[in-house]
Length: 372
Image (cartoon, rainbow, N blue to C red; front, side, top):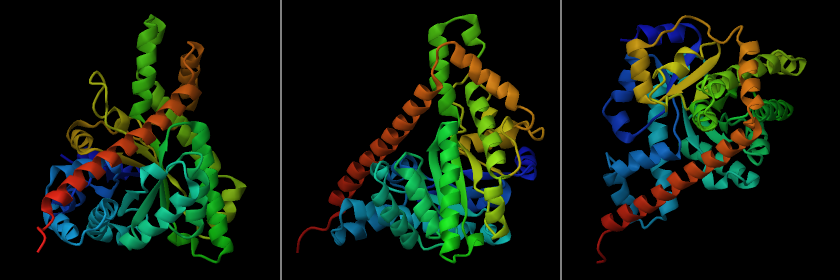
């Protein structure tokens, strides 16, 4: 079952699970995935928490206590989500220790309603790091324009960060610049750079979903021949950018001071088009020093029939650029697509958060003790 997952891990790809729930922790399922399927990290987002908490599995006792204390719905959500992340971090702590802090990490996202507010994002990141209080936590900050200075500031405080919702190559370079600037601030403050970690979550499948839709609308044979190529091309060129930045003189000075590279993390790797192989964004994005965070269905599919044939990124840069150029030549604007996807990504997480607020508020009201 796990031969392909082992091969993926052996190729230098860290396998993280893109899901978390209290039931997954308390049932021993998370520990089992770590033990048997090479999972070495966990990512969460507002949509994942909305689904987990709304399902009700295991949350009623804590919700009843929170209702008795008459806490606000925002505080209730923070108490519930940070409890899950803390417990998951404890399950993953042996991996964290065994990998010297590189893996064994659990991510938790700042309130998505703050995505366009720098100062509030910084304050929220500090609060989340304090609430979870585990060294193997990553605070997720979206790669919006307002998020970039927040990334620098938070890294500069010594807090490890997962930068999320990256779609464009230009924005990815800005994210890496923000990370290096944060390390420089941390170094100037006398912090131990070896303790600071970061990943940059570059989203994959949504790029194909949007560009394929536009190619299909064009309807020509030339357009149809390019379907399913944009996301892989985009991600492979992102890895090229990563190699460039982390071989620069600027990086060399930080490396000498003990800093860690910000690893590219392939996110949104569940295939959305059933016409594509369900392990497409795993099999075709293999390169050392990367992370692939998978929904459980993708993890299981990879373990069952993934085809891991070694590095599938090295040597692809010219072809990847040619694919994006060909798409652009058909009148499909890359800049328009990636901006739309960023805007939609923030909106989706905001919507999930608002749904979570509503469902949690209803549960608090239902479980509230009668007066007297």
